[in-house]
Length: 367
Image (cartoon, rainbow, N blue to C red; front, top):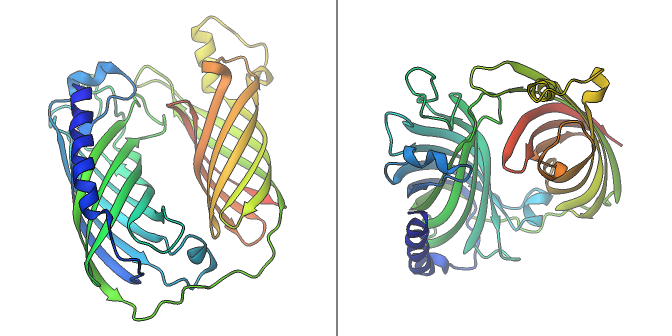
């Protein structure tokens, strides 16, 4: 069934995408409103056991407000006037009794994939909040083993193209994945993954007559930066309805600046996740002291930089742990915001491959 669905989506994309991939090499600054129709299906990425929940294709609608900058900020020119905006999403999951609908709102960035100001092809990345009215209930909806809480994180990754019908009206099309889960705050937590094609129209409600393109940051780049971060999170162990446990993380990182848009580095993480104690006890493994619950990891890290906002992506390995994970590997991705030269706000998701561990809320200091 899945192979047939993928072929169907692929053929549509191959034949439809070239019709709209060409666009003029120009910049139309200002504020835009867009409306898109989505059509696709739920991807059972984590477990084939959820196949019985998938009853039909997924239609959805999305309304966006986005801003195409004029290059007045240095990072806007660095990214060739990437668009920023906020999306409002509403999708029908094809199973009203057990899955219901999925709603969401998320800010996003449309990155140019060309190394110029051509507006033909973009990569969209967005992170926000999703809401699902129908969730797991051990008495009335026990078959829904994918969503355990109403409020979830929503992540959208999309390849999209624009074709301008006029200076104020454009046609859009794209192919993307939308993920919704709560970061293991409540079980069950397999999450929903939608693969959809979309098409729609955008209208410029506040065009700018001139474009500033060329603003640049003359401040010298600091080649090496060190950071200390402290974060905390909460997660729930299986089975559904189980206890909640707290967790803390201490990180020390060192970054090397590659350009105004990216940094590369590494560091050390120290974790203490109290949910691991209960999981070990379920395996008849008992720790002699809380210190034995400590996990120590080393990691490689990459950060995409948009002004004061960064998107960290990290891969780590536990060099000391009593609680074994697949390959002893862990991942982290999310958002960080820098206030001034030193203060850091952190919101990241810690995962073991595709399995969320907990959301890390915290802050830090850069020097």
